[in-house]
Image (cartoon, rainbow, N blue to C red):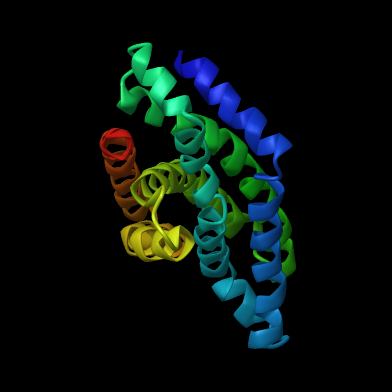
Length: 212
């Protein structure tokens, strides 16, 4: 059941533009940033990893409104509940499917952004490893946030207010891991695991509350 629901999320992301929009936003932030900072190549290379992380965090906000609300409005969540599928299981499937549609494209886009900032190979490896560890947690936060704000007026603005503060530890440890070594990666992994473990239950409870 989890695999089928996750695959449904992947198909919906690729067919509804849910993949292209976050990637386009990510690249737009990466392209615009050098215009604000200036053409100093050494400065861009030094701050590039942090900019990539910030762009990934902002891009993770883009699909939040479409992750849960459409299924809630169409009665899909009601049908799954009637069939006895636990809400946390549905949320877990959504997290897996959302990451498959969000994480790998962002990783590929990060390669392009790294080239734009002139990030060297060693730093690029640390950026990519950090994103590989952190993007599943960003996907989990996006699904949990989507469930919490589904059906509320101004859900898009509320999503930013809910998700961004919770994602700050990921941004700190992800950007810090670029120069911080193994300890920072361990902290990033711990935060990512914590969010991945809690998000399905938070999202499931929010979806159950939304049906009542």
